[in-house]
Image (cartoon, helix red, strand yellow):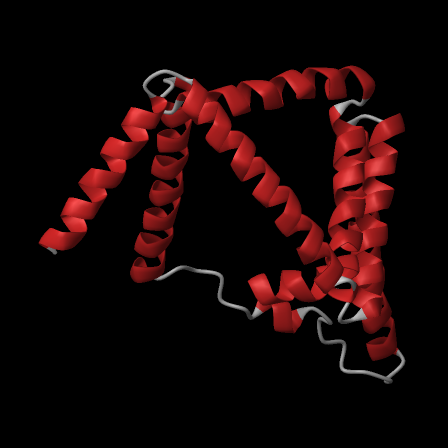
Length: 205
């Protein structure tokens, strides 16, 4: 599944990526002018009309003795969509793991387990208040789709230069973060204690 998504984003198959990108953009642009119920109904109706027309066309060919009249979607109808017990359990475990991980992260940020991380999140939300005043959620979603289909391709073409600049920015952010931690009372001591505890555990193992 992941490889198929990567192929779409990297435009391995130009035709498929173009169809998916055009469909997503057309749907999102329609949502700018129409309600989601209206857009969903029109998309479903168009899809249903297409499949019915193809099915009737096969029946007409059978009537004039130019085909067997078989359902053109029979291969998809024969696909077994049921999940085995093992697949269900594995899927449930994955969902539970993601939920637990998300809850742990939220607790880490909102209950201020690390002051610097909570301050960074607060700064992010503060910036988003200004972004939200300029763009609505749908506009950001459209920009996100455009970025998904362009940024990976640009990164692959200019990977060396991008990695160089990203490394410089990361180093600068690390220095700033270290300075902030050093100026906040107790943060440096907590970091040293955590490092000492992890070192003792490593030696014990």
